[in-house]
Length: 417
Image 1 (spheres, rainbow, N blue to C red):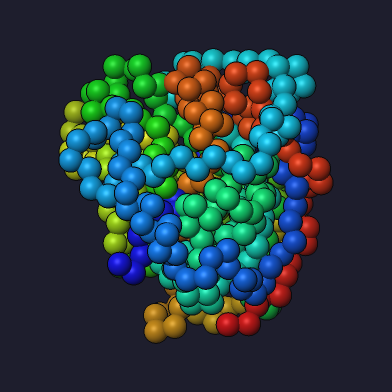
Image 2: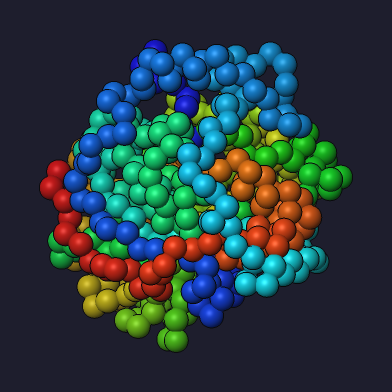
């Protein structure tokens, strides 16, 4: 077996989630910045998957509560719990200093859990598409686990690395195509906002829209947004602008958004993940097929497809970039024009794409089990409106010192291929 399944908002920018994570509140509860890594580092493991780890994972068949419980094959359901290998207590603090419980999300029908991440390492690695092949992928901006590289697995993420998302209680790995400024630099986002939401599991709509509303299984991983393999946009992403002279909107690409985003504002790249799971597979050959997006039927009722009948907390992420003079704001574009673009917009053997039209994201879940259960049980299942890493039970993810609302550094050199 060459690889096994052991690895693992919206920011309605200038709107709901952004307002809920205002600088006045979040500056107390956000993560430290990290040193940019622009070359592959020594991996946590030597090889794609150690044999001992593979044997352990193959033997694990643990169902997700409320989902499929019989007929699971090795590697399905969810992986065994990997406890945090550090003292977790100091990383949980009274929410907002007082232990306050967040307000109800009503009249909204979903519970919400939000937090902010700082940008992390910049690498040509992709542990999903090119596992064990450092330098093989287009350039990525990582955040979350600071040790994520081409060799990362669920187990390595759970047992190593710090985090740019509040603290190590969330060692999940997130990555998106790097933003290039057209002048030989990578533009790092000032911050990345993540927003999980789902109906409470007790909501009768869970059985109307799907078979059940369930938790995120351990080891789940997937890609969402533009599909690089099939050249299909897939929807579920857009660009926006936020700031004093911005014209906010849902723009299809960087070119269109830039026309409404002068210097002095922030350009946002926002993408929503799928919310329907097949109930058993943690990954698939294309890293997408085990997940699906819900849809509205002809009667206007939302639901999951029959092939993916379990609703999981859906997350939306928004990466926000300070606009500079290298972003062309004319609204006009042709191949060869110097402006911002994503690293995935220009790929060997493929026509150059309109800037931003290939936006996508990858995720490997690696939360501390107890902490993830806290925000699902409280923020999601109690229909609370949690922000800033508030866990909905009087506790909050402590942020490590040094958070800044601006990337430090903001521009870095494009690493050699």
